[in-house]
Image 1 (cartoon, one colour):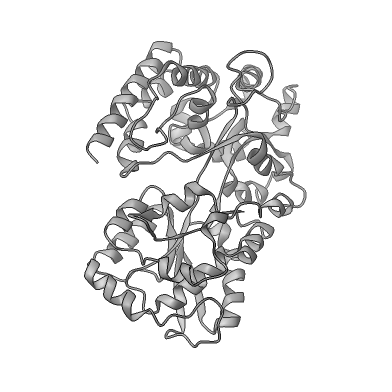
Image 2 (image 1 turned 45 degrees about the horizontal axis):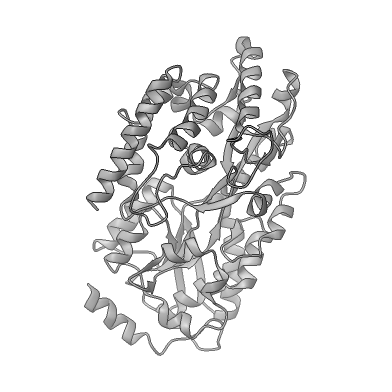
Length: 429
């Protein structure tokens, strides 16, 4: 397949750089994404490119599970979309098997793209053997979402940007106790809420899910166990795992049955457009008060960030047209517009300021504040992330203490099991 790809690349060297007057060899590009909340904004940006390029862009929204099923089927001999989103869970597999079009030659001739201007973690994620296979689309941060109506009903003070996880625990306890007859809980979280949930507690208390060299983990360390012990205490007063598994954290929150959850910036629109959105508010992601001095010191507040990449299929009929669209999305103008429209925060550093103003009537500045007031770490990944990530959510790992949070030893044992799961997975990659 690599020989085929290189032949296609050679044929595409008479390429059009973004927004030149050159006519492309296609009349339309098919683009796949998985988030309907982003469709309108991205289509608006794509239509601006179409007005200049003369190439129509059709953006198709495919739900997360089917997205990867269809992409894999296309890569195995079917038809892949021309341009699509790539994710940290699967990027390495697609890059190593030459299923994504290499972009280096286009980037070298493109004055609108300087990879130094983007978040390093996202740039490096979509690079394999020194070759860049996707351009950074966005980045995200995490914040605490709370329902003011629930806090008011039970007489609990609203969260602030100064809250620690101890404060979250105290508020969750008060709401759960007061709301017992109403079936209301102070907090909800699932094992699958990793990037937007429990991963951050591990880092707040000094642990790492995956070490920076992507070759190990410290999830079994005393520091990580301290973070997960705080998680366990919160789980004791949170919605039971059986309830969360049946309904989901977001649905429980929007049904008025949960006072607090943590969520990522990519989900703002879901709550902004919700029926009771006037009751919803955001606070800076809480910190781990490791030294118990009542203030957030350096290294005690972490926010996981991830970033999607815009990629093109190795099968694409006109690589120059595909790259031109990708560049338009990822150059400064497109990145700023993406933030202004409330699509997502930018993958380019320093151009997300307008994102905080994109949701009139709802203060979402907690997400942009995190860039300055929290330490950002890139979403943990290895060559085959889903192998260990899925295993951590199952029995024999963290599902056990999630279902039985009253047992401190069970959470500590789950951390030890997670250490072995991750180390074994990395050893077999």
